[in-house]
Image (tube, rainbow, N blue to C red; front, side, top):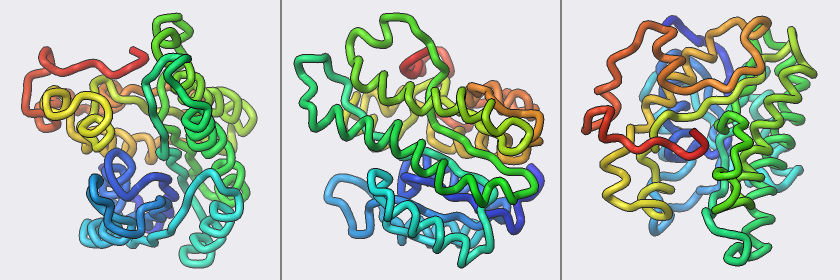
Length: 272
């Protein structure tokens, strides 16, 4: 890895999990990290707050700005972006990581949850991108990176949780459209893990301790995001990157550091 000294990265949902792992890695490379997330007070079931994440990122070597942001609300996103620009002078990268999940069928998904997933995933990604783009367009090597899956229209990815798939694919459709819209000006890419990632969502919502054991640690996504952040934005856009493929392109093929079990015992992630 080289350096991201002085670069400013706005990361949604960065108080824990994949967002925090990306922030820690980019901070270690010298970046300024805007931690845009909801958790300002300790949560009874979830680790960390925007303030504890900021402390860790500064210890890692970067500068951090914790911001209370719920990506459903335009005024909060707009205000956060203005504070970041005031503090650091601009924005060089946006990571749309904030996401809501509920893997339920049509009859089991209350409209309140349907709305939440679409407001956070699709609309939140679109909104945050829109507010950051005026500043990204002024950067020397600007990137938007959505933590979203490749667009795979196989019916099996819709049949069991159509509401979640629609909302998550909305993030990926933002990649498809914005990459072409801002081609040659801002790189817009997606990043998705090959395996499940050991986060609070896996622990509390999806598979508990057993699934955590068969997952890779979030660090792999942080390392992959760091590779993407240093790519040429003019020529590397519109990609649906997989974490292991990105690392392989940087010469990292031994992924044993990211998991406690061998590769053949890890669970594949959704949409693959």
